[in-house]
Length: 243
Image (cartoon, rainbow, N blue to C red; front, top):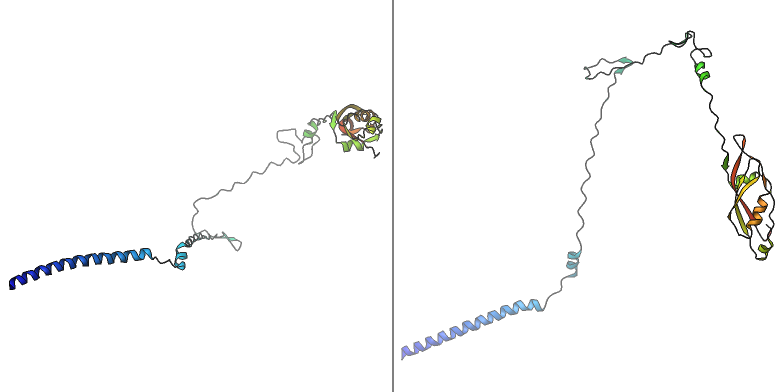
């Protein structure tokens, strides 16, 4: 009977120990899970100061130091003249520069050119410019004066000595037409108008302008002292106000 009680109590102890171990294992596992889940559910916000510190970029690295300045080598030039006298050299120079003097030209004097006419060349002067060479030079040819030149309207206006006012066409007056007529003209050596050509202007005003300009007279245009024909532009203004 005593042995049975020991056996039964032993079985109960084994059963309680197994259940306690299993219950303890699940309890610890649940506690660990709760400790892991709490930080994930209730997260704390990062401090703003620490967050801004992480977001600000670090300052750039300092620039490299400038390179050291090149050393200036002072070369001392020793003069060969001391107190107006040559200094005795301390060593023999490696290279000696030869000074070549120019030959003195022969003195012509009054004897003329060597190998030439004795007594000089007639018409020349002793020690001066040889007159015979100047006398033998051909005369400089005269530049031919051009037959016709181009001048501005301002120059031709200054040469005008006779100006005929054009008759204002009656139809142009009634139509209230006014403006400038520009003509291309050639002034002869005698100062007369030749080869009139219309450049621009109203067709109703151009015939009257051409007829009047044909009667204009100019002073001859002189070039190198000679009269030449010139090409110029003539402007004739038509105004209803009479200006």
